[in-house]
Image (cartoon, rainbow, N blue to C red; front, top):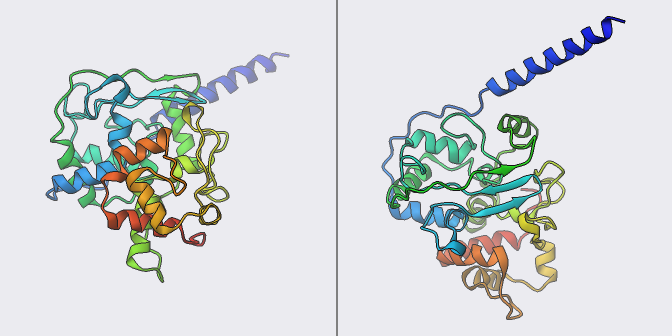
Length: 299
């Protein structure tokens, strides 16, 4: 029965070749060089809306702004947000705007490795070149912090980043931020924010066994398995209406963190308001509320 070990060796060799090909498989696209001048104020506004401050500043440890180190427990291991300051060694000070654009919009690091989808890049895929230029200009004003974030603590096989290429092929979908014909400017602005920069679905949509959002069937239906063991309520329009929310009360809550019953948001949603949506304009908060309080299941 010499064919048995030969088959085993053959299968092992094939597996090694397949893994090697997967490791070498390039991801991401070359979208060209961005030469636009960035607006620092607009970039800072977009960074706030996108949750950069809350996710990359370790407030519990009195960490410096955007220096990273925020702990995120997942079913696959523990992640720590990276340093986004201008430090050239531990931050993004040595990056180019092209590398920055690919990281933000495509989730690909400067060396071509895929980022874990805990980084909400799937929501930023439709950021324009001007958005990127503005963000880049804002990040250039962040003081350098010469301290590394903590190493990721992912269990095997999730610590093998090349495996994320398969995840991307199976689950990565573009954000649904394009305007929908027949809806007004306010509604479409709300869609752009809710489905894009503010990435509401990251917490308020259930995920499957692989950690991918179940966007088709569970969009905004809530999640019982947030990182760290938390939960997020449903925010689909039917549930919001049933619980007595209105456009005005939702917009107010996004500014103050206070709900219609007088209670306040806690946990991660409290941080979202404190470090993110409270800095938005009244117009943008109303746009978000308008979109969420409407039936947009067909959009």
